[in-house]
Length: 200
Image (cartoon, rainbow, N blue to C red; front, side):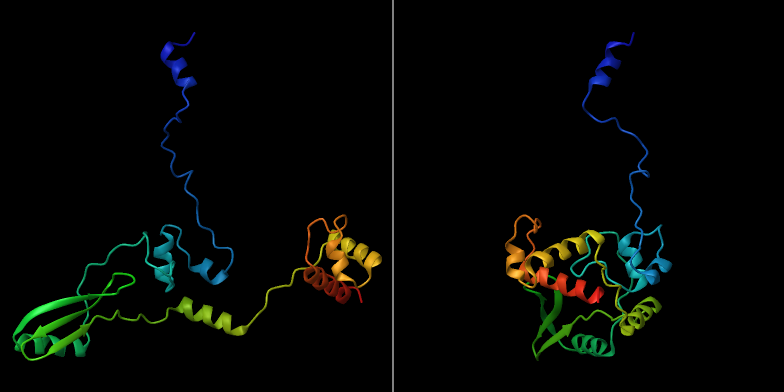
């Protein structure tokens, strides 16, 4: 006989905690593109992999999976000249200008006794990686994917509609008995034309 505590544990609706977390983690498998699949590192997160490949995982702000890089910001020659001008002139105020839509930092407006100087901060554009170049070459080829072929059941259904209605697609669309998926007249017409092209 089991003890009262063990019986309570068996009846409990709460899930028991286990340490087998790796079984629950899903591995990302790239099946759509062979170029990306060859360069994919399973030890990194999706965002880190995309960053290494020179791609973006999200068009908006990244939500996670990346580490903040702490380092010196490289300045352009124009920004260095503006800094030298600021150091030489008597600066009294500096105003932060933010993007009204996203709220991100755009530039600093320095107000001096002589003039107002704008110092826009522009992110450095990274050069295209080898993966990006390969993907661009692949896209430039213009290869089309294989067109969907009609199944035997679909061909039988189209033959049945043609036998009854001929080329009257409006009546085919209204037939509740044969058109059980409620396809529109235009959709049936496209399917019939494709069937006629295949069965010439």
